[in-house]
Image 1 (cartoon, rainbow, N blue to C red):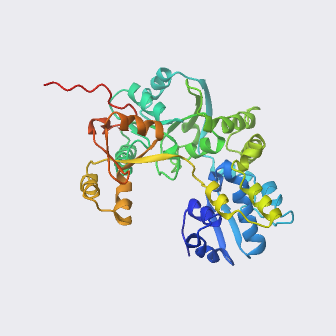
Image 2: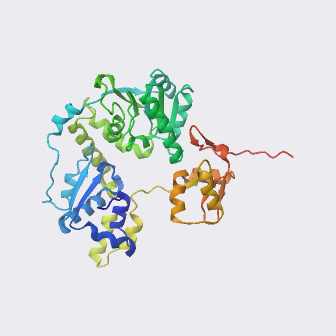
Image 3: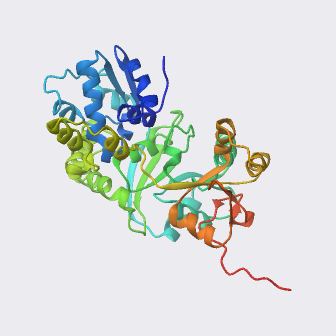
Length: 396
């Protein structure tokens, strides 16, 4: 049995380096299980589907796509192999839906942050998931200081786990607990709230958020509410297409969690995406190379990055990160060290990284590795501030 990530799997299939390609023989005569299949990024969806199809059609492999929100990919697969056999392993999903229904969905329309904060403050235990780290911090600061918690990737992983431990204890003991989070809490985090608020997003994200409400099934669905709202800010570009598909799927008042609604959402999303399903022209490059008798392995490898986010990591010298960053500053470089340092790292987009760098808030080492020098920018409540500490004064 081989356990790996989707990033490793697909990037190995499209790699040009022999060291990455040597493991590909493990894919033949195998059962390939893809968990959370709906998470495949849209901009690489057609190349990913093409790769899976070729493994099934020519390498005697079986692909199993596991998800609670099946992404309606039959037409995508059959575009490459029309006779490809596709079978639902769990028939009767519409009948099962009512049996497993645990929440009631509601819509709140557009809410200002102040109005949203008031509604959250009125509930002893509530989780609110928003679409950006900036929104999470702003909403968190509007909540009453008592029993509020914040979760985002501006907090290093060890810090996030410590906060989640506090949240779980309070939920278990029936104590007040109001959490503002980005979508990170939707990915396999085991918490159970009686009320969840989700900023409008893709329907698959809304249903993932619903999985944090009445997760254990101890309350009737009528007492477990998932409320979808529109925030006061325009949605980030990353969310606009999926939000459009969500609105179309729910336009007739359909139940968000019914299988037919989920299918309608994904069909709409794929239709809205069109050519963007192979945004970087991976399949076109292969076709042109095949026609010319020269396969463009290197250029395809350069184009295909499943997670294409130009971020830089800043390591935070706090708690267990102190001795690790000391070793880094002393010149140690090893895979084991960076694996441990990852638990104390925060990823920043370039504009935020450069702002901290320009303000002198980072200690950049010779190899470009960055350690936070100005620890006043790291909050034990909300993590790393996105506002660089400009305007420093020196008094003599």
